[in-house]
Length: 407
Image (tube, rainbow, N blue to C red; front, side, top):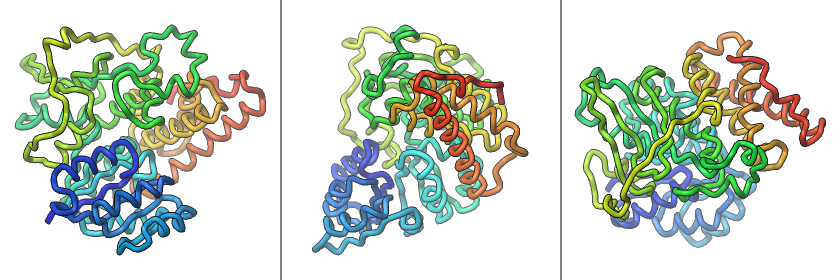
């Protein structure tokens, strides 16, 4: 029986993963080793009971009593906290879904690779902040990383059977998010509620806002570079409002291979779950005649500064990705809390990158996950300090966020 774990089982990716596990036989077909979640312990416990998991872990230690109460009467173990997440990742499993949001996924994902598992990677931060470390750990321990982001799964599938030496370019598509047709002056006044509504995809709040700011696409550019060993100049981004083509791979003979499908994350999840085979999936089939046409437009780096910053990060290399991600997460926290405006997020990330550019060895490869996490913590502290300084100066005083230079 195949052993599986799902990290981040209560989020949108995790819920869709469990849906596919249930449809493919549930506890009768899979040995579910571990399920992990956040504060929604009732859902986590319900999932653990349904799939008869060995252990359920909440990331928050204060939620452990509630989780234990929800699992009372079952034989399912309950645990909480960062150390418990790592311990769960170290339990033998054949396939682990990494769908924890943010840098919190780094340590458990890295631990899983050191035990030779197949890691289905839905967490962008792992490649952005620590890509070379993850890839080296997979190589050293005989593990495998399968991309689950819809764009990177599409690239992975388009590359099947191809020689990477023949690849000329990779095109990552972007919906453009909630504000793709808004004038800039209106975007400057965007609210959290407006940024939290995606025109095509059903996702969590944080990734939906990242889609509106295009920080998710900046992360995906960096992720593509790391996953597929590409040069930055080989990676492009284009706005594709219909979200039907998820990525394209261009070859040296001029051919473009496109991966198409309706916007449903179960495409990519199901491909990773069943790889190297394809299984029937409960997703809507694409009707090209009904669709009628597809449209594309440039991804303007002025309108979307997150893309420009991502390219600067790729050029710098080393620990710059960890800074980019950490500053982005702090900026997103600040926007959701009402401390900064929507357009201030990119300005804050640029300022933190500028501040950290003076750090000795920022462009050098990370030597350990501890070094990545230390850089992450330093960048977060800088970002929070700048938000606090701006908050003290007044809600509309942007002087503390004006970028001083490039990395």
